[in-house]
Amino acid sequence: DAKTTQPNSMESNEEEPVHLPCNHSTISGTDYIHWYRQLPSQGPEYVIHGLTSNVNNRMASLAIAEDRKSSTLILHRATLRDAAVYYCILRDIISNFGNEKLTFGTGTRLTIIP
Amino acid sequence: DGGITQSPKYLFRKEGQNVTLSCEQNLNHDAMYWYRQDPGQGLRLIYYSQIVNDFQKGDIAEGYSVSREKKESFPLTVTSAQKNPTAFYLCASSTGTTNTEAFFGQGTRLTVV
Image (cartoon, rainbow over all chains, first blue to last red; front, side, top):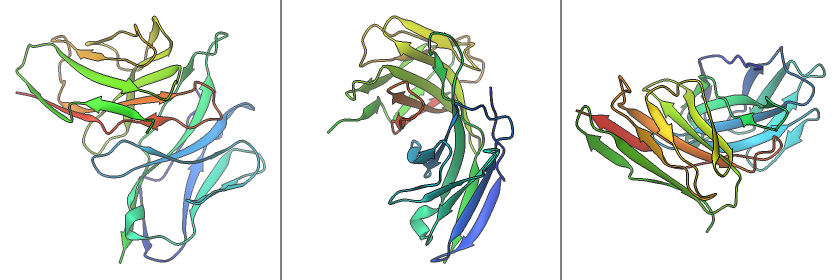
């Protein structure tokens, strides 16, 4: 399975942009890059995903390196509500029957400083 | 509203007892997943199912069992064989294709005393 590597923790000041990095050097050509975040004592929620091109939505932007071996989740203006654990994952197909695992790593714990 | 529901939110059991955690979704998703999360840790995959009447072991299946008799439901049984069952359990569902989002329930916190 392709794996991702993220820093254990990051801090950012409120109302400033945040860039959360993710390395996935063994990514395959058909892997989508997904980001989820998990608030304390809650289930993760979807943030954004992409394949090759940069993506924007109301929550964040996703910048994907040209070689796809890394990506960056960008929160344009962090608020206290953005304090969470952010997971970067790859959606992989592991068998001829399309049996897909959805595997998470340990993520990055983002702390927002008021 | 469509979504995925886990119940109960908190569960207490005595050591040596089997316990079943419920997960129901009305999103018409084919794929469902169970994860375990320990304090300060990431999510570890227990079991997953891509279709009714079929499921696969994840990375930490020992001591757990599942069934998928209906598309909407994917219950997880924590058996007495699970050595350290106290944890936060999360259920998720997805269409099963890699370019769509997965939806998570709010989790069940199981404490075994």
